Amino acid sequence: MQKKTKISLKNYNSFGVDVLSSNFNIVNSEKEIVSFINKKSRLNEPIILGGGTNILFKKNVDRNILKIKIKGIELIKETKDYVIISVGAGEVWNDLVNWTINNDFGGLENLSLIPGNVGGAPIQNIGAYGVELKDTFKNCRTISIKNGSLRIFKNSECNFSYRSSIFKEKLKNKYIISYVTFKLSKRNHKINCSYKPLREAIKSNNILNPTIKNISELVCKIRSIKLPDPKLIGNCGSFFKNPVIKKFDYEKLCEKEKDIPFYIISKKKVKIPAAWLIEKCGYKGIRNGNTGTYNKHALIIVNYGNASGNEIFKFSQKIKKTVLRKFNILLEEEVNIIEN
Ligand SMILES: Cc1cc2nc3c(=O)[nH]c(=O)nc-3n(C[C@H](O)[C@H](O)[C@H](O)COP(=O)(O)OP(=O)(O)OC[C@H]3O[C@@H](n4cnc5c(N)ncnc54)[C@H](O)[C@@H]3O)c2cc1C
Image (cartoon, rainbow, N blue to C red; front, side, top):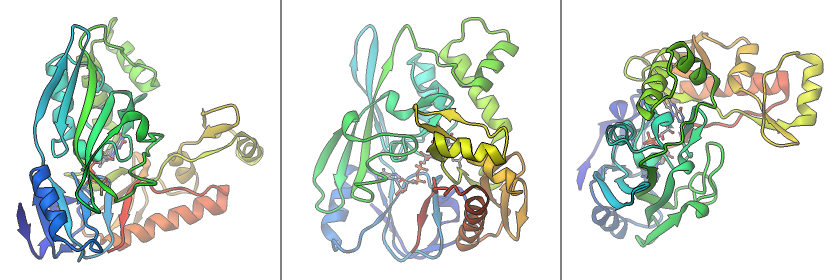
């Protein structure tokens, strides 16, 4: 275990917010996590850090930070149809995706180029282009923050839903994910082109029978055009979730605002793109001091260089209030806000 005091977190969060951590600990194994927990006071709940691509530090952090660096990809089981692999929480998510593509293991291709680490992925059940982590997730190994005991969560126990899981809700900050196990196809891959931009890209590239490699490459291409690279401009991807509202409320809104885009969730519920709501409030591509929204995507709040965490947070709340006033819809943060 490595311990650092008074270090800047600028390179540890994709917003690039320059805050100080007075207790920064890097752990490379389950054993190191357990020994950390056994030494610390139970009241001093640590902040768990993966790739820092979905986290906003509002100010300097006094609490212990536990940066998870457990590495390794292990083949647990192989049949002629599928493989089961166990992956260390500290592996970079996109390196894992590339490894699966190179081995022709199917299931993660639509999730190409999502930033962050493997251990952070189940927290909000990462999703993109019609696929979610839960579709291939088998289980995860975790360590209890309270007493260091080991617990395995099966897929059915994780309460996965849109950008959420039990680890973001009922068991928030209660368990540290050390390994994630996936079940991936070895043949007859299920190619998912349900997402319109992906379908259009396949068509315009004249691909008749897309392979998982084709899908991964196209997803990377679309994402690179649409999303800002955090290495160039600080951001955490979507700041808010797309709100799910009652169909009845949606129809009422349509009386005032025609053509509100929506996706049907169930007979009684629809999902509305938060980016559309924010754009309608005049917030697309605007700059507010050192922060603002990305010019190609209103849902992405960016750091133009020297924004403080609090400045980004205040700006996000301004957007939230404006959307509430105009549409009577309360946006919910997708990014995890760290108060202190
Ligand atoms: C440009 C950009 C595009 C993005 N696109 C998408 C997208 O398409 N779809 C999507 O779903 N997300 C997207 N994201 C958000 C982000 O990439 C994911 O949420 C990612 O899974 C976060 O992983 P992380 O390791 O960086 O987590 P962190 O930011 O380090 O942490 C996020 C949360 O998880 C907790 N956590 C992290 N690791 C562990 C662990 N091992 N055990 C327990 N808790 C842990 C943290 O305490 C925190 O609450 C995007 C982000 C960026 C910057």
